[in-house]
Length: 149
Image (cartoon, rainbow, N blue to C red; front, side, top):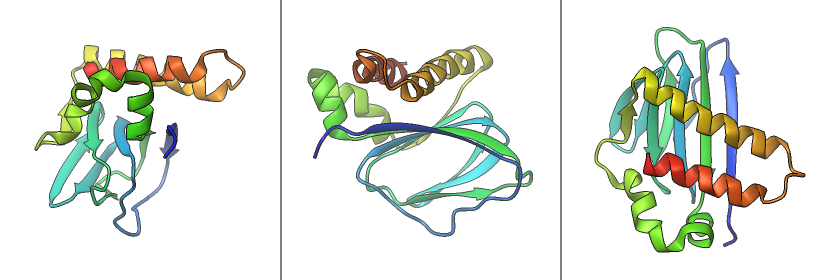
């Protein structure tokens, strides 16, 4: 498998519930910018609020569901093991350790939210400008910073 990474931002102003559970062959970090959601991962349900990070391991069955207020904005970061191996192989176990925790959710305070959002927005800018030299390497370093944080 070749290194894979992507980041996606979505703002929804109406009800949105994933129609079915799914899984994939890559890790996923879900960050809620605004609103509130329910997130099901395997046998657990999380009430996700603004400033929450979720770590969904590859092959974990998951989906999101509306809560009381349907309006929300989220950023989702995806990458596979080969992406981490390629750029940070020596530190792979350390970097992927958040995905192996029993509790998949971290709720950030305002200062932590600001830092995480800054990293995620830099990743989005990198994705949007495909002409930048060293784009994948910079994206990999931002991913490592997020995972270490």
